[in-house]
Length: 423
Ligand SMILES: Cc1ncc(COP(=O)(O)O)c(C=O)c1O
Image: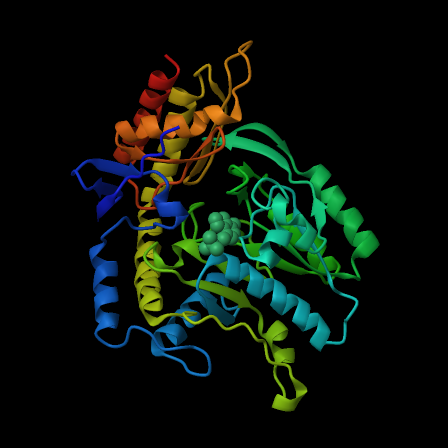
């Protein structure tokens, strides 16, 4: 099957323009990163201003003012509870760092038995070996199974909503499994990692409201570190700066990347508490140092853009536009896509959505090689929309600044693509 590459040469707000001048709405937010649209004048100005000062200095043993300022800004996300910030340069690293910090923390505090970890079915936390081990052993990582350390795997809740209309909702089996695990292994668990409210790469698999708070309560009762991976859900995706804020939860570790620098530059941060940080201090000879140094960790250009993006995002969220666009998205999906005979389910929460495609009732199964989801995305391209499928599921993740009329274009393009593919 043809795999035509689009050569995108320019960005204008939520739109991308190809070499022939054709315009496409960015329905993938450039792999879930873009916040304010492309070529944003405020982010561009922040980037240029930093460029006139210094493009890169290492955080290994040195520092720069933008990192200090950004770390202070990020501490406000948890109202000053997670005050310690470790910068890296991508989402996998943000989670890898949280995992390593948790394991080292228990070693440094003499709790050597706390070395086991737990994660959820369907989880995706990145592509390094540590994060592959935390992730589901499905198609992305199964090949590397022999080299992955064991993880207690908990069932993910079954929840599905769109435009606030709940089709099914059950987090109890998940919570019972977690309670059982904690009762049996609680003293041996170092940490549990969770993508709060929506598991993006699982196909926008949702959790019922209150689920994250219940997980946090259970972890706290057993002294197990809670790592929230908000690489995808952070920075406005679910209507607030973080998903944990919507659940009134402050985890032990908060992992941020993707939208942190507005979708401009690779930047990531792992936040944690003063109490977890404390045991890492001591005389050099005690060997308490946390060794995890990437060359471009906390790059000043990324930090400068992140500061500008965060300032602008607070105003954007306060304007109510992302909320209006999320409502428009949910309603349009329900009204215009859900009734299609090849749509099995639509799920939407904030500016995240999945449209699961399937053969019409009674029709034979689709072969994997038919790549139906991908074909629909190619058809959507012809209608001015860039989308990325997950198998036969269409994942819809627009920039946070998308306006309701652009949502109309987005859903209209998917509608037209379905019409074309399933004539
Ligand atoms: C929840 C989550 N965690 C971690 C990652 C990995 O981020 P990166 O691709 O920047 O390494 C992703 C990427 O999609 C993600 O969705």
